Image (cartoon, rainbow, N blue to C red; front, top):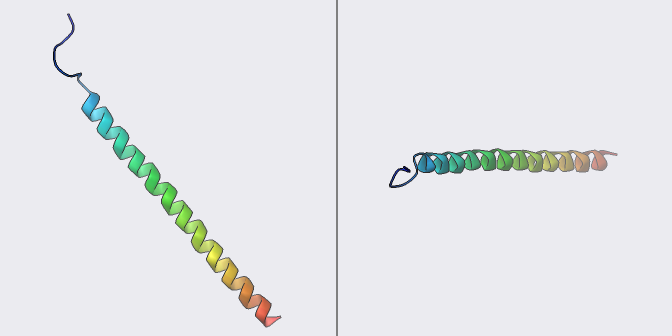
Length: 53
């Protein structure tokens, strides 16, 4: 006979999924911000090099 009430692990699975998605999104955001910072540094360096030459 099936158990009455809610399923055993659905709350924990949902919480785990939510937390893992937060972690993945955080890593993606950090990578994107790093790329943007590097692009800005490269542009600034190129402008400085162009001014010198």
